[in-house]
Length: 425
Image 1: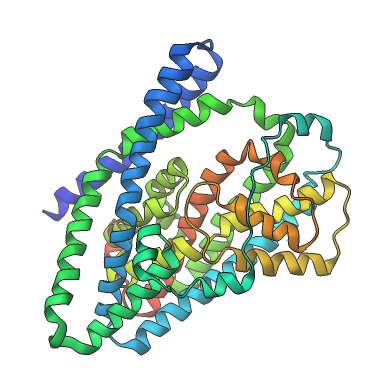
Image 2 (image 1 turned 90 degrees about the vertical axis):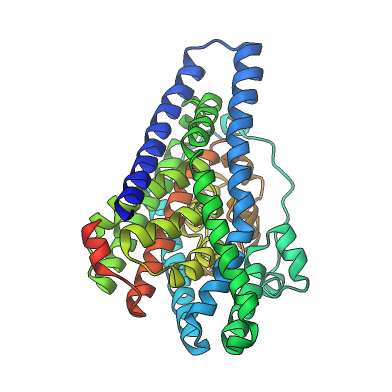
């Protein structure tokens, strides 16, 4: 039965990757070859492709809250020992915070190396800029207090992931502590978790179609012309993301676990492709947990805790975008940043990533907080909004790779990593 399941999952991931490539090709054809018309614009792109793509995203979002809640209750209940759970949590938290700080340093260095904002024709950019949305930046004190749920049911209803994680952790710890007294409730969560996993597999069956429609619509709308004025900015972000993903993460993986980093990327690549197409960390949670168990040998009692936590607080890709955007805006508007400003950016962007929802383009909202911290004009965000979607997709793929690397390292440190599974995958 195990072989059949492996073949099935391999078949699905291959289909997702094929759908990604075909969707991009179809979208580019629509943009450049098919002339604008009511049928193309309204019926096909904004009708069929939009409905199916967004319908799939909604199905994935439908799974996230109950799946994360049950996974973390079951995960913390399975770990049982509060001390061990605390160790896992602290290790994951330190890793996430450290890699986020590293990511911003990489971004600032790349920005100063490539100078994306130097010599820009601001009038051309302003003409292309999307209208600036009203964005509210939350203060640091609010961010910290928002971790504690004042209304757990409200947190579940609104999908406040950090609060859901805290509430689920408390329930899991209490269930482990009370043992046989609460066996019925523990069984309920365990069985409901199985139901959610099965529902996940059903929804994932639609992934190739959803991915095709999402990618097609993205490329049909933007083409390549929108990229040209901001090519250096895009290049700076993409290079920084590449360094973070393939140098920082893979070096950490090799140092802490001794696993082959290239095999790790090969095994995890389908999840990265899926994250790229959906641009939402939360939607990849089920697939990440499943892939880490099936191909890396990571125990689900560790991954069901660290992956949802990572999707909530580990936003290295977003931090990279924010670091490059700060340098870009400062150069474009002729503002000189001091070393103290750079330290402020590192601190603010690291803290801003905590509690950031794992949804498309949320980095633009937290970017206002970073800009305000160093006195940069918030209007600069309007310049990069038009091309943010494609960068958002790339940084989501980097974010979830960081979550997976952290989970594998933490699993290894807690003797919850089956190396035979990794070697034989």
